[in-house]
Image (tube, rainbow, N blue to C red; front, top):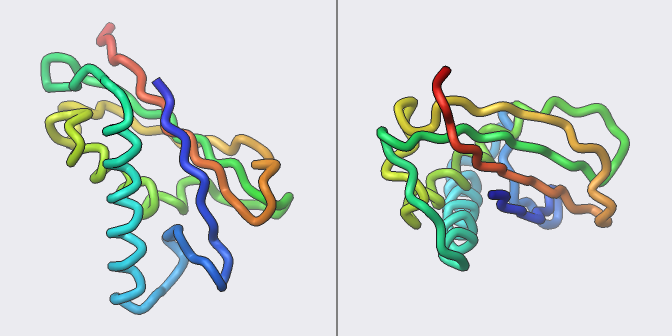
Length: 130
């Protein structure tokens, strides 16, 4: 299953956190709370199986950018962490620890095709141990 988020990251409307940013703690807290809320709401829109220690999953995070500038997808981990915390709040998994979310990979997806907006896809995959 895939969850899609459309977010702004301009100086006029900042909805994302980047590992290289150094925002004031109050600004960071507001953005984190917002991301956590939209993560929770996105999961609440549908009916999903709950992932547990006995039924773990993996995540593939794909970042689509509004411009052709080079970017480092894992730098958006603070954004993804807040979204995942919201998904945890909504009950998609019992916890977001290593026993339930076995892996998380980051990919560049190309251009978002949406002016001044990033598109983030979080694909949840069933984890089958070999």
